[in-house]
Image (cartoon, rainbow, N blue to C red):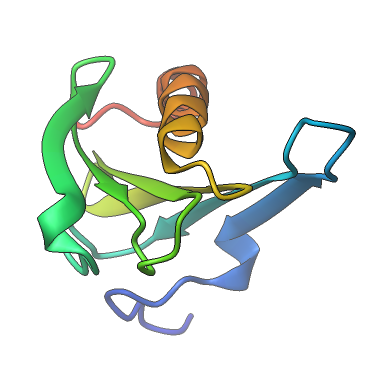
Length: 116
């Protein structure tokens, strides 16, 4: 079994879903990545637009425009000794992307192992 490398996403632990633009509704791209041996505070790309928070009580960081592109939002949260990264692209609407990310993160979080 290969050793886990911090900060590297195993393609077997990653999923992506998208919805195309329809009329006035911007397209949506959602990625969920589990990274072994990582901390949710690692690799914050745009710290000026990041804030501490929680997802259903689980410590988290919300980062607006993680790649410094409008319409993106990422939420990172701890999953035992690993982390989950939820990444959203929503047209060019950063606030809308973060609203979508918070909503999806709240639904995904209960499905994850508890931190204990």
